[in-house]
Length: 378
Image 1 (spheres, rainbow, N blue to C red):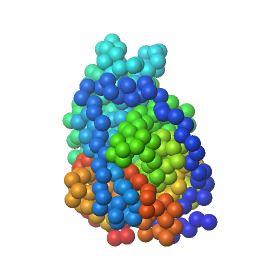
Image 2: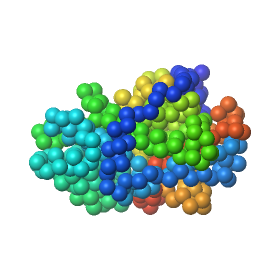
Image 3: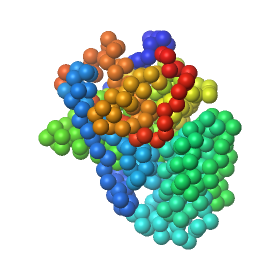
């Protein structure tokens, strides 16, 4: 039975991991490798965190620099843009980034559009710029000005929506068509192909993580026992589930107490909308609705959902920085989630002495921390 007063929710609908289902489509990783200046993000072992958690190994997959952008989002956005533009051209996804760029030269009239709370919009704007296309990015009124300026720096038109991120998404849905191609990382009725492509694009991150754990531990097929992933609308977490849960890895999610839409949905066994405004300093996670496509995957695959306060996220930022890992509160949510999980008396089945844990730090420093947020005193 779920207890709403707990910050760790053990998902009653969880389905135990099964045997590996095989690697994701190799053409996705090959497409990523074809993007100029592409390189893997580092996997950093932090023995001090392993000692604190009572496990054998804690690694941090540090997504602070992907193609010059400070987050993982461009991995999903790049494959989704490829899929979206290929559909526009009546073709299958392009094998290389250069082939995609050549095709775009014939259609400079096209515009890429999305709603964002920061990183996804910047990634779409970046891709539009390098492909020679226009971009329009819808942002919520309470987004940090530094994030909006970074998007504008990619050449995008930034449109401020008088409302929350979820309201910006609804506005984006109304603008799809007639030369405007929406590349959203959340789904809604009738719009699922592109959000699924975003999730597919993230698969390269998890392929890298598994290969890097193998290399670090000196054994092919070394198990990732627990993956801790931050949650906004749930697309990245569903990608983790699709790529790691089937390899006998337990998925643990972390989200702000002020925007705990997945936590609430798992507790209710149905999607729950958490109304805004969402004022957590974990700006990239300030989402009130789980993606419709992500929800059924997460309901089966998430072992435990954890809510963390801004104070816990701030502490995690400082501690990661002391190990040379600079990130935002959104990225540090995974460490805050691991620490909150460790305090739960039921966590021993996951955080065993021999376990290997991977924390997915999803972004570097993207904006100065905000103060005075609603849940800071929790």
